[in-house]
Image (cartoon, rainbow, N blue to C red; front, side, top):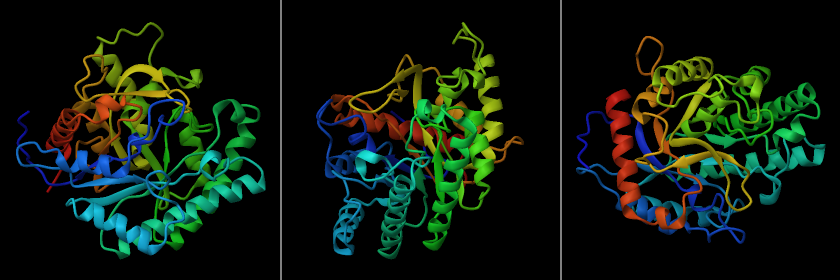
Length: 350
């Protein structure tokens, strides 16, 4: 692959959590952090390499209860590979010690505790000089079915929890990004996501994390038929109709977007291990991918008038639930890196 770099911003990152999400005893073995870091650091296209990584603040990668010494060792392992840290995923779900954002007081307290611990970890990485940008990613930690028992009340309670989380984040100098994904209750449709952000009403602290694989499913109305933007029986060859739907979606959520994942999707849902079905992340060059990655990325990265939003200092590739054979192939990450360079060339700045 030959891709000449034309811009140096935003920075280019690789996500580490695909080594964990959908892995485990009911699927393939997790891929350890050092292996993920080595694969990332080893990728190169025409002299350009990944600038950094986004982290999952949970075992078996990083213990949420790590000491400063523990995090110093992690930071040294990352900086020793000429990488930096960007955004962190807060492990807010019950299996990792968290709780539902619309659950009982005890559950919501566990959710907020995980946010606080992740913000503290992020602050430590800043103090260690390895992190200069990025957000803390959160979700509602509950499913659409549970949310649907009381839609208005559920969204109100999630918003209350997110506002409390925002206050915590502000105390650490952090921002939060709510991930738009169809498996999270109250966030499972684009209008529901927008309503939640508006109810939280802390735009300086709580924004939206766009992931191209997930947002494509928003247009299809998975788990939220009332939010469907593409017609039934849509012909994927009709890119004009697809781009019109994605433009409506991005016009609504772009003003809230503070974190961005470049990804591909084949228009289907997918889940492995214990992870619920969500957008199928495809390899960058997957022939079944439905999007022109560079073109669709521009809908998130440029304002209506075509100027770059500059709303985030890095972009990140997300390839959750790839088979381990794909994950451990150096070719996978060279292709991903080349794709990210192309996205930055088209929509970046200096």
